[in-house]
Length: 145
Image 1 (cartoon, helix red, strand yellow):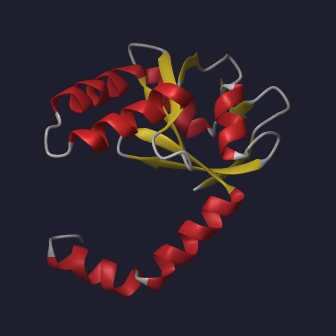
Image 2 (cartoon, one colour):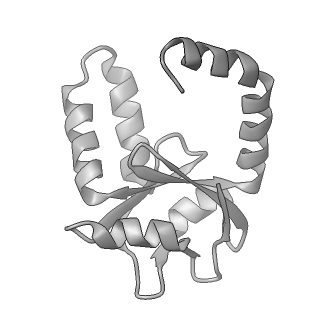
Image 3 (spheres, one colour):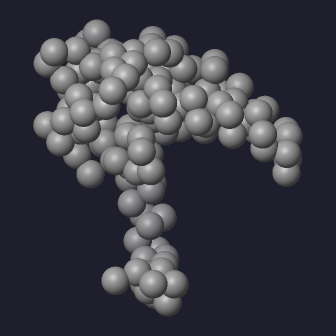
């Protein structure tokens, strides 16, 4: 987990390890959005295209797929990392998540970077702590070292 801050222009500066990850990608375009209107995600465009195909193919509950795809399209925008390792967030996304000129927390997970507001970070931290022992036991039983 890395602390960061959105600047007054709506950009977040990534830690060096995240910058290196994006620089190593063939395609430099990114997709910045929120699937749940609480946590922002920064996706490499290749990963985002896989998600779009997933939405199209998901048949278990079409309403769920439609709603998540709607949220992503409503708040999402293409972006690129600039030469200083910053990524621009759309004004709509910043307003919706309440992260304009605010501290945030960055978390790399499943090929994307999640961007949590301070409030959401504290909520997730409490939630994860409540079930930590049981969660670790279940994962160890499934093969976690």
